[in-house]
Image 1 (cartoon, rainbow, N blue to C red):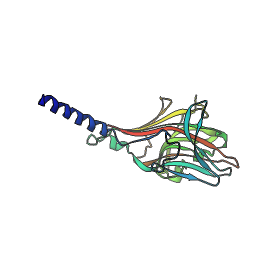
Image 2: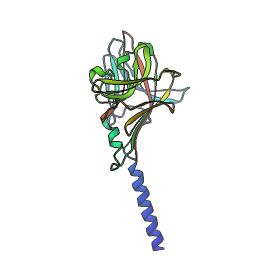
Image 3: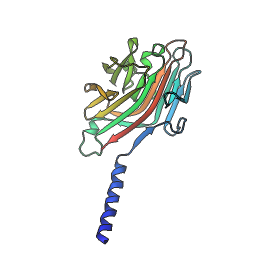
Image 4: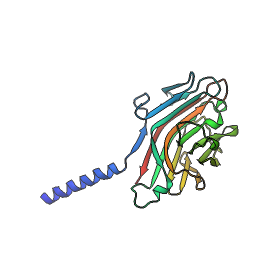
Length: 234
């Protein structure tokens, strides 16, 4: 009996330790129906707003970012802390993690009103939504390009690697986006379908989570952010 109890205790200790190895994990289900200031920072220009909301007939809780109705007004939500977007690290056999994943649900309410260079959804070196490589902002994210097309983009020191992933995607619908940072590659998925793998120009640094948009002219534009989570894989 003593041996059985001792064995059981050892198993419990192992299970508890294994569960903790899966941390850190970031999750946002909007269950508190407000912005958690321990997780997020918000940038709102002019009359921009950030509001928890829900649509009864859809049963979806989400956070809605709305820019001011003026050209170049930003609405940005970024994580307070950074994540290791470092493919070279995940290839090191002496480290505990093998990849980093980010998943989030998002939709755009009025695509034509957005400023393409300032739509960024994913990882970014700086707390701004400028996705143009010329700005020197290293990123690994979903972005807009000319004519409101959705692209995956990785940027390093002023050089972009882009993939047009707009085919078959309705941006005004809820879509599930995923970015996976693995050994020497960053994968992108939409609605669980692989859409791009970047291996040439990929960042190798700690980055913030960021979701941001900007008004193109004198009209507000809206970005809705749904369920969101990020985690390292052992």
